[in-house]
Image (cartoon, rainbow, N blue to C red; front, side, top):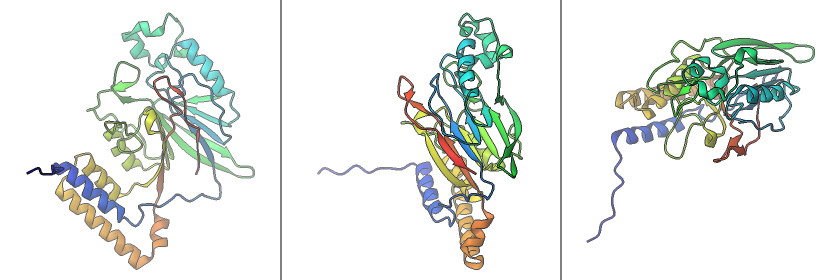
Length: 310
């Protein structure tokens, strides 16, 4: 007699399913960010790969890497000129793995990737573009009668895949002390694991980057690299979310699941005692943006710039 095959889940899959169920009971699970009186408009793009799309207006323009396709000097300078010509008062750029002209260590190892060019990153004319490579900058945004300061940190590194610039072994934690705590906006080329990083076969983001983001808790995280995962996600990065992520990433087991259940129960009690509004007012929402604007095998333009108001 024929029987229907059972869908047997291994313990990790079962734990992840339970963790997701618990997280749906989080009283702040679907909390959206509030817009402050001194709102700043940020236009986010990434992975333009030599394309020059029409961009939305805003106070700050952020490009999260892969400005170019091959990354030689002439190609990069052409795209840099385009970026500098945009009307935004503040323009931030980090490198991506295609932007090899900016990774001198990579070019010393693979000089053929200069494509016959003799100029280096030191010869580039950055004009009005602020380039960040494991560095921070504090922007003073003129809001017409008032101003607001935002600190931005940028880093180009992605887990090794193929042979390109600014890469590191995926099992190595390079992020533990790299990103400072006083960051409002974090710009990385690659995504954190579980946040807009899904391909057809896996979550391709870096788990160590995600762990560091949980510690720093910036207001906005902008990245690209995984073109198919373009989008936007708002999340409260509290202890419940971190425990959930540990379980999904197989860093936690049944004890972690029990702690997640306890944390959510405590949150529900806080809502009961203090009221939902007070609990919401104490929470900070982090906006994640995968700002990739190209897609497909030929890297054709597919997505509009993402506009975030913070």
